[in-house]
Image (cartoon, rainbow, N blue to C red; front, side, top):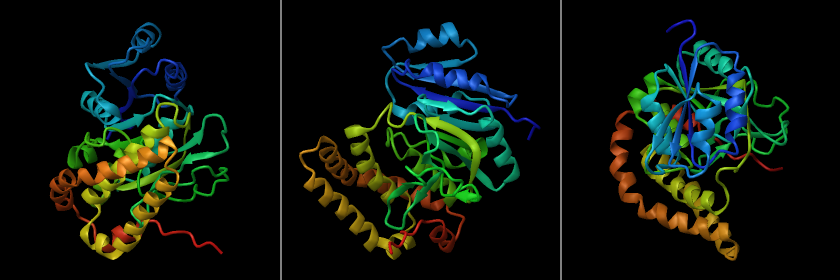
Length: 321
């Protein structure tokens, strides 16, 4: 690999003109010398494209004829990219000037890693974590490590985590070539968890880069009932598709109780739109079971790591004393 391998930053965009100047201007300030920026536009109807063409001519634009969601947008960018390192970045972010430099450093120092997770902080509370990488619980629930915690460096000593939060996630092209692109069945939410599962099963670790800092306008381009639906649906889809059978047998009780708890809590909050969306998402997840089971054999056939390794990278509940 070259001394400064080409990094491709892919930004999926749908009517995000209000966010793009902050995001794209911060990329102009990067200290890393060798990168390209690709904006994939999901058929926006606002001034996104005019803004980029007029004020950010260095950005390569991939216009799509319809909204293919975050997954379809990022995949189109991955296919158009020329870099050895492929980075998905939300449009509602601001990157620290050393962000790409630290991403490349982390991957260079850990050749066993196929993924790198950024430290994501809240845009309006810059001492508060949004994500120190993804975790995955033994109950089948994905975790944003450190979410809402004041950043005191409590995760900075962690070399590895389960996966990279898709708001600012770096992948080696070699890993993507082997395990595949984002699963477009997911459309949005948990696409990063699914890809992390496929990478981990194939033997690629995820390194945490605590100095690769990104500020995120949390839920600026999603959230609310939309997020509740897709998280409810996609949690079940990923569980059925990716989790190895020995792990399912070992922790099926915890996984079933977690889904039951979510179901009961949503029923109790039935008057809330987000709660109703979460219930619809769970039902949609069950309806996606045939598709998940159809995809499952191909995913499980790529597993090169032991069941003990998989068990060890799962997050245990913190005891409350």
